[in-house]
Length: 254
Image (cartoon, rainbow, N blue to C red; front, top):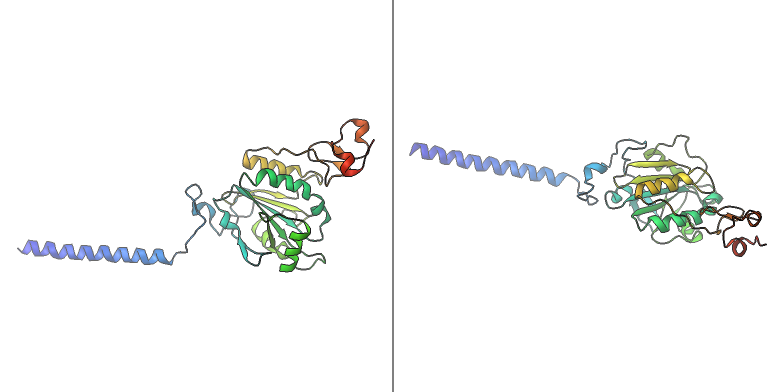
């Protein structure tokens, strides 16, 4: 009997300890922040919100930006649920940004269906001042941006400069930042050649496994080389390398 009593007491104590440990574990777990942007293919551990650094190959830290719709956008909400994120640093006064939108729209048409999110980071309004929500809304309207494209404010591009190392600071706009599905930095720079931004096209192709196929169209490229490799000027007829719509779009006719 004594041995049975001792066993019973030990059993009770054991169950009590187990219950206590379970309760402590449950309490601890309930205090941890709940992440909703995780998938089995890209668990939260690969997208730590504090990041691992600011250079190529690093997971960048999370950042929150005000949107033109009045809410906020957290970059890490895309962790594991998008193939990548293309951030375009721009300003309302940036004429080159506007001139190159036809090329960017060709990127969007090819890569959005493959899972690449696009976010415009507006750092200044038309007067070079900090952008308001109204400025962000005007940017979307003036540039006829589809609702699938995000427009957010990043005054003076301060947040993106904290998250991503810019070797020469903010250079000539637009600047591009490409992240993969784990929010690792794949590319950061101004895109290279101002007509075609070939480095960005190449980075998007490598990220998605789908090389960029540019359309041979002149819209937005009059007087210069179009993304598809044909020309939109008054010399191409002599050289035989005009885009088919050169005459109708740019007015350079034989």
